[in-house]
Image (cartoon, rainbow, N blue to C red; front, side, top):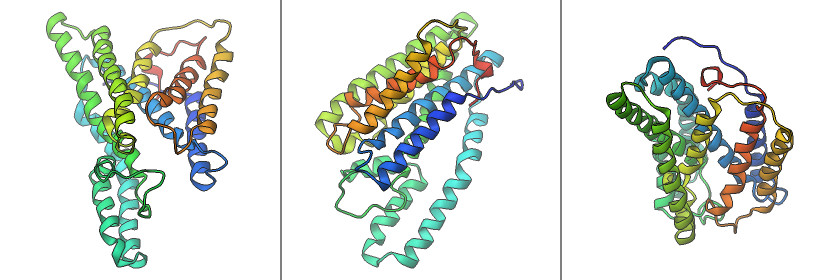
Length: 290
């Protein structure tokens, strides 16, 4: 793949800062921002957008996707810090945590090391907001686990779609990729709404109920490859997107069924900010940083 210039996306950096901020406020001062957990949903949409854009750039340049290079980049970016945190927490558990909690804590550490923490918590039917057991220091790895699982499945789907169209039409067709990704995203959304109503504790964690959030960002990446022109109201819609995230963070709470229909508000808000903040500039996929 040829080297291409990257472009800083200020609206994405701002969304990241906002997402981190609301999550931190939620954990330290939950009464101030009872729905601050929606920052995770913002991150999922951003991840879906950036990773899909990166994969599409490679398809544009080479007609294929190198899975080994893609996964190697993710490993270099994530593994060193993640493994350091896990090792530190393992040592701290031995030194400071009472023996009767070791089984729980080391179970969480094992699950986090293999990026299966979200399924581990779901299997134990842990309520993220009011668990009886004290939270382990790595319980937050559930969201990173969901992202890592997305990084495995999503590129394979794009690669398969590109391969099928290359065989049939001799060239990868973005429209076919869009159909495949749209179908998966819709199926995940429907399942997420159902599972949230039937088993909300597990639904909060499992990947199938969250995949549509990544998928919505990925579908936006397909649209972002088209040049756009500025239209009246783009700035207003950007602020509307930020307001949607703020309202979700302020009005959601531990009793909100999540990530069902309620998750649409922060997800749509994030999509509006990413898309509308850049109207008036052509953002080809090759110029979008990941």
